[in-house]
Length: 347
Image (spheres, rainbow, N blue to C red):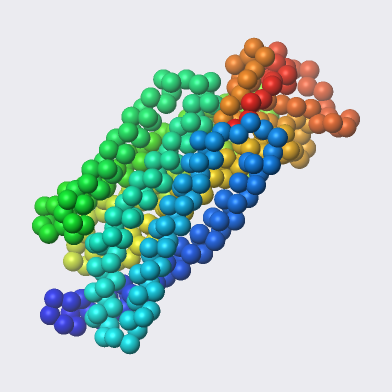
């Protein structure tokens, strides 16, 4: 039942206004957490005695800046709604709906999502490339998905600009929605495939060298999640499902509410997960992370040089100084012994 001709009910208007405000507040809260993570990663990356990859540093910085730009755009909309508090609710509702679905904010959002997802996937592919001993064949499919993702997002942005950021026909709107949905699934394919490859490589190498037995299961799982940016893959899956759920007259407003929250969470997690991964690898590269109940330190790095053995590209172990209680492992293979002599090349 509509409150006025052509308008949804008052309860739906309240829901839209509440969602716009609450999603912005959630974004600001998550951005605060992300800022702490980013600055901490920056400090670790720049202060540790390791070779620094400026491309990695630039990537996590650009991703962070894009997140700040997105949240700033949402805050401008929320600020305007607060200034409209004395006006009729219909006016606020119309502004909120228009501002979040058309105009400059949509263009900004699409550009930021393209940049964030593209760079985050690029970091994951770079990580996968190195842990698989710089194998181009391993990352070939992921790279194709990434190129398709970038092409689809660029197409959506170009079509939106041509139509003055306000699609006038149902055909144009449907085309844009299909392009964005396809791009999201390309993002999902890139992220999921790359994450699984990284997890498999790290886990299999640790099992081969017996390093997984020195940790409790929770610590081992946490290591895999951080090293592979797995939370990003999970959020991509939810984001992709939400993008293809069919709309109908009953659920369209409920779906609109969900989309507001998932858009915020996706961008933040897509930036934070690779940033945490970079921090963890930087710590491992510097040799400062010591695992409890273990006489060895593991380095899972973007770059590695070995003294002749393949597995040292993924794992390097160093004996702890002063650890006289470490149990002798007589069953260690020559491969693992070679890993202990690895000279690491940092991020």
